[in-house]
Length: 122
Length: 109
Image (cartoon, rainbow over all chains, first blue to last red; front, side):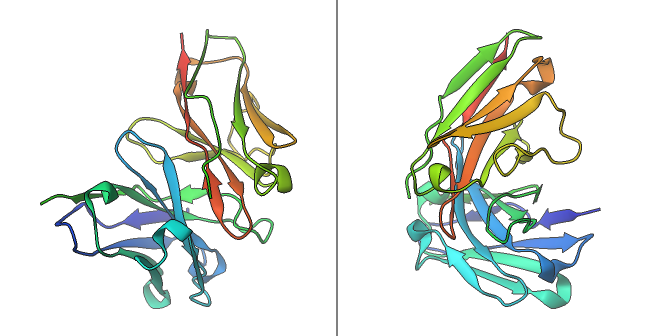
């Protein structure tokens, strides 16, 4: 069965960087785009971007351009999301989610990781 | 890219039907038939309930249905059950990016 298992909670100081991992199993990792979505406490979902695990190509939301880097290691079926220059309003649960690629467009997300809480505090 | 607009709350009694709207623009909801809906219970990851406007993934009850007219998509939950109480989010393809709605808290009275 498809599973996305994310790394554990992180506490970071303002200005630092955080790197969250997402290990995929139960399917061919390179066959499906991976998206990252975050959710601040008590707030809604916010799309951050996607990575094509096959080519390494990425597309980031304009809001995060210059601060976010999405990478992957195909040898261990793991995607990564690194966010730099952290601020207090980056405190959120970060999710990875698989795109089933039904249409060829980044249209829906069928499997989600359990989420990783990143807390930014001095 | 602005978030899609959803009502903050909706409610209904068990057995009733409730509809949640999701309004965007011609650059997202109105421009493509790639609207999705997600259900999220407290402390849990979102779950895909509807994709491509009106299609249900395997395992999602047929009490959940989706539709679209112009720049507004809708999710209808029929025969409300207690376990349907959750937050619901719409999302849309927006030209190589994805945009979410602000979410709607559905309360089963």
